[in-house]
Length: 449
Image 1 (cartoon, rainbow, N blue to C red):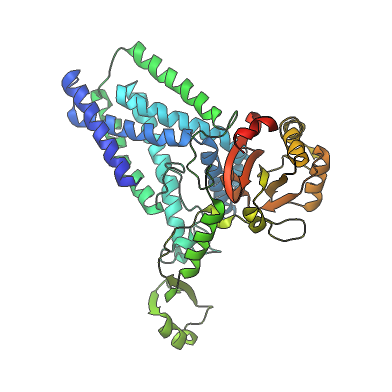
Image 2: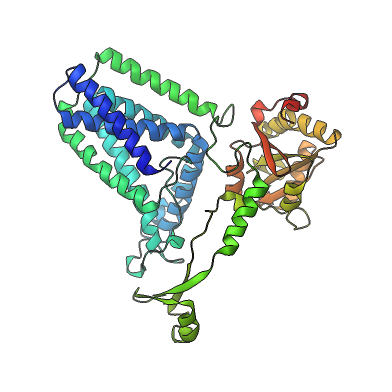
């Protein structure tokens, strides 16, 4: 689904709602204002829902922003606030759930006219917040590597490779928007945000005050419980990520690798690091004259042909075993069953592992892992790059008789929204995935196998 399709459906829903509000329910204060209430409300309900499906995805995106803000402010006059961002990152899941609940509740509040003045101000604040985030995301494309965001005099022509956070996560993993598109979307939303601020007295209100309060309160509770069900007690019921159940990871990875290999360099874009001027030339012309553009003064950017298949995180599906080799190719080609225990972060440290986290492994993971090994299946742990001694200590702590592989934590977060979580694969295909709290007994997995 494209952004155009989404906006068309939201517009159609807003037209229907406005017709009901204006002509059937006879709320004729302002036709334009009613339409804007319904349109922005429907947009917030949709964008909030696709994020509520996967609150951890939004939390991980917030962690990226907090990390980038820490680096951005560290070497400036506002450096004293930089230490605040690692602290905030520790509570990114809570912030994620709060923002999702607020977004969905605001969507309904706009449509039914709940407390117009409060709703108008909250809508304005959240749109301004989103605009700052998406604007920052897009503008980092002008900031070359090694240059601080606030060093405006050192900005260069826009390059997508410069961006530190590649997308804002406005619609979660349901659809990825180009940074400029996301930014312009939020800039456009500032218009109704200001209209609501100054025209809230004419916003339509449906039902009685008691009904509106009950409806918004009930939706807040339902959204909170639904969001928590998608990471506290289980993994998301809808998976918009590349590692979804039924995916032939081996085939997709090979196809993406073939597409990458087929890409050709068609020319070069040369950017002057001093004044930002740029020149483009074919590969043949570049090879003839590149000596005239010394690398200490010019930045070389390759111009490439379009890929036939856009890469996903499956392209990054690589791990390192104890010997330093990548075990993934062999695992994807294995005709047997492989139980992958994915834990993007082992909670605690060598000699002082989190007791609750260890208990989750001992009570939920280890019984299944031991039974799977006894049945002749392969089992492997997967975690982020870490001190091998620490990983070995964790293995001994939980009594694991299987290896632990190390890899990129973002890739591991993409595979499954559970820490730890279990992924069952065979012939390079994902057969099923389980949250550690929903992991069935090994015998019950026969339905999958």
